[in-house]
Length: 229
Image 1 (cartoon, one colour):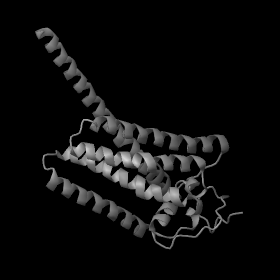
Image 2 (image 1 turned 60 degrees about the vertical axis):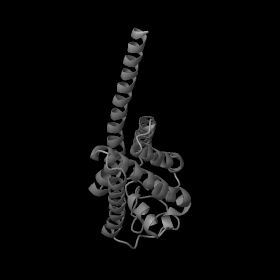
Image 3 (image 1 turned 120 degrees about the vertical axis):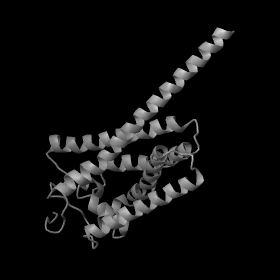
Image 4 (image 1 turned 180 degrees about the horizontal axis):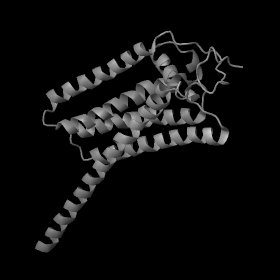
């Protein structure tokens, strides 16, 4: 059986063969992760400002969102998909980041079939499509809003399933995968994942409005053409 004094993840009875504690502090992990994201966003913003200065700040921000999610899906979540069977013993930066996050959801260390399935789809499908959406945005491609809608709905649906399966385990099996401390419960588990519901919801509404306007303009154009014929 697992020793709660050695393995800090929940539930207290969890058994993680080969588990190795992180040797990097939480602050070091978060600074490196946050710094990498900031560098990515800053460099992308600068590049877009230089290459496509006609983009509004709002449009540029949406493009940055999809660049960030594309990198997270392919690099960070792709790492999990590759190393899922040995996550408990991984000691490189990404491995330790995953073990830190797993304090809010230990399913990432137990080869949970739902988590593996959803993360595999995310890394292989939604990651590349996020980059495709970013490209469509900065080039004003006609596929911008269809792609934006598809990826955003996928983010929302994936997060709803993610929360639903964990809640089902808690209610039906009396098993919590999340440590109760504020940092793990509210910042990691709810906060980090709620972003993938909140921002995509805003983008879905934006795409719906743009699509509605486009069809309304098309109907008006056809009506004028029919009236003049």
